[in-house]
Image (tube, rainbow, N blue to C red; front, top):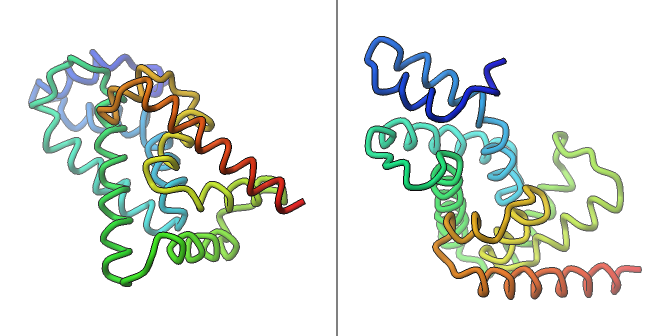
Length: 184
């Protein structure tokens, strides 16, 4: 199955001009879903997530020749996707000239209107609580809670110390807990 292909094989196929397109197809098959959902949890809107995922894979493709293998391929791609999300959200806030709180409300409305999101009421409450977090905390929370990433991997992706990530996750969970308790 294509998703079981090792990163080393994908990189090897990429280096050979004859199998470069196959390498891209294998890369997409293995990582497209993970990257899409990572982005989607940050930007909420399906169309925005879809566009950003395409942008991420274009960047990955253009820069794959320079990938040094000093980190895992997924970690490197995750870093690109995370940076794209933060850049996108910051541009969106600037373009709309709105505060973080207002942006959280806009994203919550998008979540409520989304035909792609069909979670139960508890999941919707959790998502709305997550949206109140600052972007970096939301990113850390999503990486830990949804992607079950180890702090060391998160540190590689975000360029932040493990201690700072643990503190950020702790603060995020406390904020979410307070919001969820206040809703009951």
